[in-house]
Image (cartoon, rainbow, N blue to C red; front, top):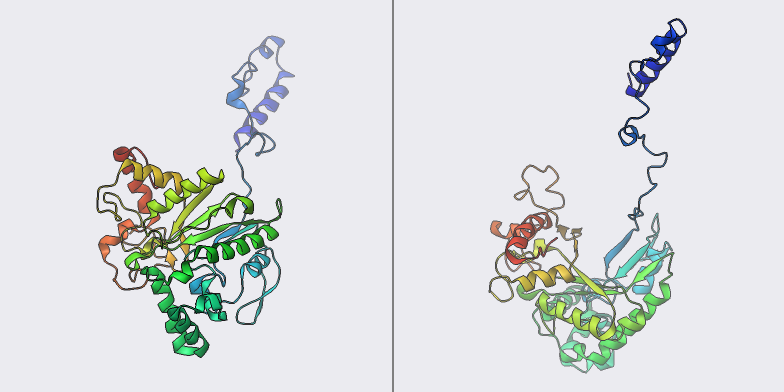
Length: 373
């Protein structure tokens, strides 16, 4: 029987008995009743509204931090022809025509979206395919253009050649021209600002920094908290300047100092980093021991991690979580991003977020900061 019900029944029973017994007996405390001077906190019933008194946010806003359009080398090279405008329209719930000519529409509109096209060659691929005279003045770029026009295997080979050129640092200078980058960045920001509707839909400005040195994935998406007037003051950071994430963090610090803006970054697909996404003892960029400054800077600039996406889940792995029946969800463990080096078992512990959370606790004791909190 419910405790409250027992107390109530006891109270009713004693009330009935009191009609038949002398008054002196009524003066005694009935068995089962709580004295009126008891600690109120001990018997306080739950409030009528479970949300009363809460101050923390509970409303979830759904969005996507990682959408590519025809401004990205890989997306455009593999046939994506829709641009940032169509991406924002789709996210807001509008019907859009896909690259394959099919109409598509979300069942429920998103609340926010980041079109995070690759900063390396942002907008270049679509201009190469379109035959931009400024870019085709370079013989290498002109060869890519001709291959795309030919189509088929030639076009596919050209796409991979362009992607590898950026990954290996062999990109033609004309594609890295700052004026060209600024033009593309300004166009992208104008579109994001046009679709941003405060209180209804957030078109967040961002890009992807695509570090793939030696084929190892250390990609980061950079998200801005700023509007276009601030964000356009510096073009995105590229791997033409550095493959080292620490240099990206320094660029972010320079951006905030120069503009008064705010940015953060989140990495993804450690499963294709071949053991260097979440280092524990050695800095993979320098070969030297990790320092307290590395831990502090990573914690400062990377508060988030993209834990799952189409190129494999990044939470954990069956070898790292053998008792977790869901640890084999969307596991992809072939090798690094361009599959030039196959996966080895020792790499796994430095590739997944759940293990990084545990390692970070130990690192906090050694370095003063948990870089993976």
